[in-house]
Image 1 (spheres, rainbow over the protein chains, first blue to last red):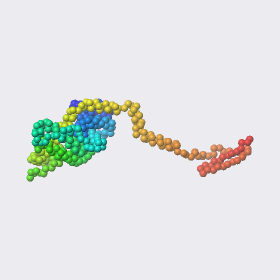
Image 2 (spheres, rainbow over the protein chains, first blue to last red):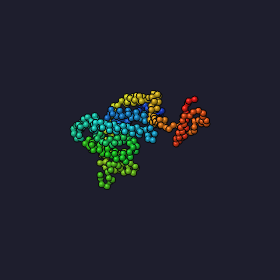
Image 3 (cartoon, chains in turn blue, green):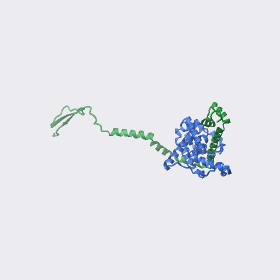
Length: 200
Length: 157
């Protein structure tokens, strides 16, 4: 979506047209937000296909519940909130169905990741980073889902603590403490893979 | 942590890197970070984690056909757009209308089906001042609420 289009469709105008049932406005909304919502969903669920379904559900929900949006928060905050809730609901449904913690498919080969100081590690930095991404994915799955959601909103969307607090309806202090916990846990889980210089 | 300097505070460091500190605290952590190797390492690790996450998700985003997703979403929304008569039916059968209507119907049904005493007669339907003929019997019936006089007579004219 070009910046020009974004200018034409500022949030107030977009909302107004959406409330009138304007399909073009809905198309603009989808184009503006689908990538960002997918990224959030993917970061929380760690599943690509599920994330696509979640994004679809989010937009359908927005379409059906638009009349309930009072405009007290930003449209993006509302969309983030619906997305995170859909992701967490999906995770709970998944856990109930299978009774075990889901292991994402992307972790293939994660156990074979080269360790620092070995020949394999030195051989190919690119390969190492790819492997490290896979390991991060595996370790992210070990974080509690609320901490993961906060970590994703901060690092992917770059939301401030206040914006995250508003999105998840929690206190700013809770955001800070959960984010600290998430990073510390990840650093601990990845301690063998992050080098002394902090470079992957 | 070197002696003579401020203590390492990983929580403050995280907030510093997130640009969430006030000016005073920001300046203090910034100064601390200039010489503290362990905090420099922690800062690099924090950036590395964020970088890894963004790279991994960015790859998934670049591999996703968002035009297809957009078409799917719009198709789903069109499916949900009902014709006017369907909207009218759903409005009629919506809770907002259906529940009050059902309540009203129940009240009216109860009201009209409740067994009530016959209407009271406020006065005699007719007053007979005189009568000629053979009267076989007369009965006067008095009830607490109304008085009724019933006359039977033998029609043998």
